[in-house]
Length: 368
Image (cartoon, rainbow, N blue to C red; front, side, top):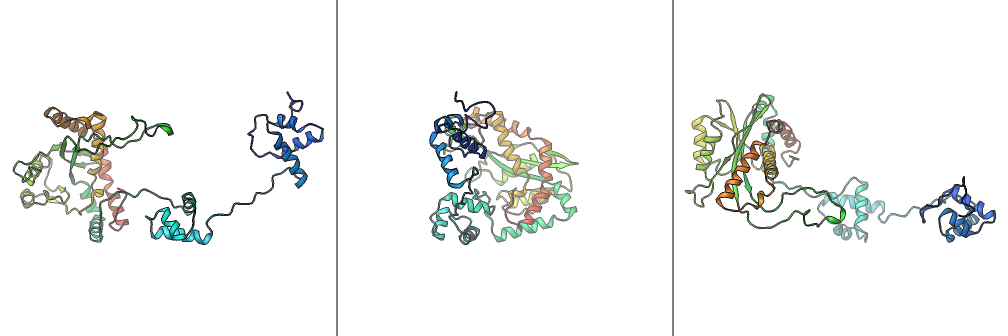
C-alpha cells in the first residue's frame, strides 16, 4: 500500500476516474507533491491516473486556486426570438411535426432541442384523443341539452331515468390492450406483445342492456341477446327485434312517470317504435346525437368486456359453432352479472359532471 494512503487522509481510492476533483482533494495532491511524493504515488493514493495529477498541479500554477473555475454556459441553439416563434407556430398548427418546425424556422437543430423549448413553455407532444366527429350544429344541440338539465328538478328526474344501449361483443383473437411488467429489452418478447390478426371475428353477438338507480342504489336489467331478424333484408337486427327487446327488458321494470333514454339509432326511431312508446305512455328523452360521452352505460360495456376476459382469457379463440356460441353467450351473461350496483350508481351519479363538462366545452369534446 502507498505510504500516502494512511488513516486520516481526505482521499478515496474508489473515486470515479473522470469526476471533478474537490478542493480538499486538490489540496491533498498539492501538499503531497510539496512533500516530495511522486505523481505516480499520488495517483495511486487518490485512485486516478498520473496524467490527471499532473493536470491538477499545472492548474494550480496557472490559476493559483484549488477551486473549480466558473464554466461558461453553453449558448442555446435557439435564441429568444426564434423560441417565441416556435411556440407561436405550434400553437397555431398543433399537428405540425419537428420537420415542419425546421422548415418554417430555418433552424437545423435536433428534435430534442425543439422538445426542450416546448417543455420550457409547459408544452409537449401528446397522442390526439379519439372522439366521434362533431360539427357546429351537433355541438349546439349538445350544449342546449346540457343547459336544459342545469335545472335541479330536471336533473333529479334525469338521474333516475332508464339508460339503455346496445353493444357488440366479438370473439376477436386480438388480445385486449393491456399493460405488462417487463425489462427494457423485452418489448418484443412473444408473450408480452398484443398480437393483431386483422381477421374477421368468428362470433359477433349484439346485446342490449339497461341501467338505472333508485334511492342511491344502482340496478341493471337482464342482458338481452338481440338475434338477427330473418324477415329483415339482410337478416340483421331490426325494429321488430328491438320492440321485443323492450317488451322483455324495459316493461318489467317500468312504472308510470319513469323516463327512458335511448340514442338515435335507426331501429330506435322507426315509426312502429314511436307508436309503441306512445301506446305505453313512456316518455323518451330527446337525446342529442353523437353523445356517447353523456351516456353512463357506455362505461358498463368497457367493464363487461374486461370481465369477459377475466372469466375466460381464451374467449377470443372461440369458433363459430353451436357449442362455442352457447359458451360465448353464457360467459357474456356471467360477466354482465359481475357489474356491481355500486359501479352503476357511481356512473349514473357522474352524469351531472358529464353535463357540466359539455357546458364548459360549449358542446364540444369532453374527457368522458
